[in-house]
Length: 472
Image (cartoon, rainbow, N blue to C red; front, top):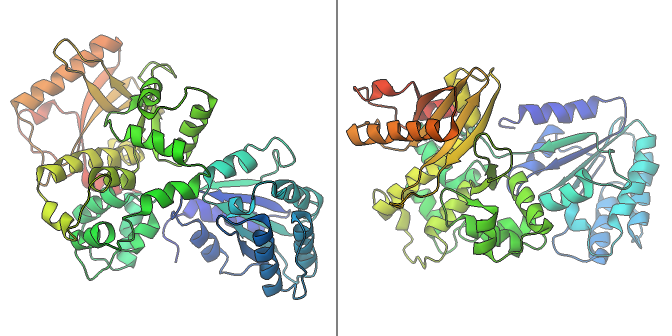
């Protein structure tokens, strides 16, 4: 059963129903469900299916390809001497297939491109010289190494330039999709628990599949993160290594951003990470944004100058907060941490990130999904007292309204008091004064458990509750 992914399923079905050969690329971060989607969509029936080997040389990759050919019809396939021969054998297998639509699924394709293997030129020749000259081939390339997919396929300037016919980027689940998945798995979680689980795991389907329905949420987090053999305790290094061939520089950026909640400018990243400010850094930032680990956001009224980069991956944030540099030996650490200041601080930060990942749902609740809008952030430098102002989410609308969004995570409905009201009014006034906006600025509260109605709440134009983030 496939949870969600309706748009992606339609694209795959359209490619299958096409009158011509189609070249589809499916990509996204590790554990997001790429392989599962493709296999389920086609009922595990392929003319040819193959998975590359991690960190193996060209000869080993070719041996693996030979095994796949033999298992799927080319019984006497010899060991190919190079990738040109390997893809020629694949062409022979396709020619002898009785399938009306020849679906070829190559998973973890980036792993097959070992150094000096000439894999890419052979793939180009296979597509341009064989598959595209027919009308019955559906080639699906898949992989977690987003950097390779982007450079070698999506932005190819040689033989595959403009040859891809479908590009499918698989994003993590939304809260709504996680709720459906949890019901399917019979996890028995209410929305408050689903929210907290999302704050720790993000929307990665594989992580959710590890949850044990016989355990409470706290027990599951203890098992996954804090037990000696917890499956997610060491996921951090494996996650980035699977996406990038040389992850050290990517990790340097991620670890730098993990030190500052509000995000960092490019200059700050350079100063903290020790990386050089050059084209390679631009490439790293772009790829981390493509993988949805970070977001790049601009000050309202500015296109690129002064842009900040902010870490928004829920799993990575949880790892930095509770795992990295913390020699935890207590396998019930999480259960004992609930309601401590450390836990409460994390909840506030993590909820903000969840809100940023669900800005579409916020706009739906506000009734502005049909209005053209842009999302920004706004910040000021510290004043003489060391105080600055940060607004993580501004929705700048074409109907002359700006929603100034404040996010609050509490276990009970949030209550605005005199001090907080003064802070909100001051923040709005400073924003209007500094930006010289002529638009109406609406104070918008996004509260996990709703907002207590009192005299101060009357100053709030819009309220979005945690339940609203579960909108589809």
